[in-house]
Length: 115
Length: 111
Image (tube, rainbow over all chains, first blue to last red; front, top):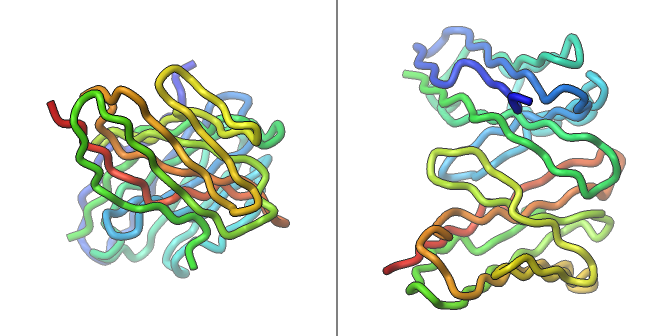
């Protein structure tokens, strides 16, 4: 298995532009998480899905952020409009929700810079 | 109060030292617990799960104290390759079962 695949790996964009981050979870995993990591705040959970349904989006910072999971093999995180304070590494992770002790596997992340 | 709290460090220790990291969590209904390791500019990866009875994997020992809502990780005989950020992770404990990460503790093992 190729693991969790995220794209792009790096994104540099101008303030005000729309940014779309993509994630392909591991096949068969039906829980998917989006995290944002910064030096100041560490890894913050933005949203997570079970069986393609958003379960908890309380970590989404504001209306500029939206996430979708149209099918079991694809999810997007969109920022519109982007702002410099959105600069961070965005990770996607997937796991099997088979009880509590199952490992979450992370993608390599998307390093977003908004200038 | 943060849901999962860790001392950010850094912990600077010589090779061969024993080092311990602590973590506290706020939700008493949390179900399961983990330690993840993150190398610089890489994604987090599972180091070990933390079971109620405590568990050991080679030089690494994890302990859980549910009464105090406290998790620990002990690393014996530190190696240079142990240098990384160690993330305490808590799962579950509510209507929406979430996987919550602490901010991590940075370990630097010195030669």
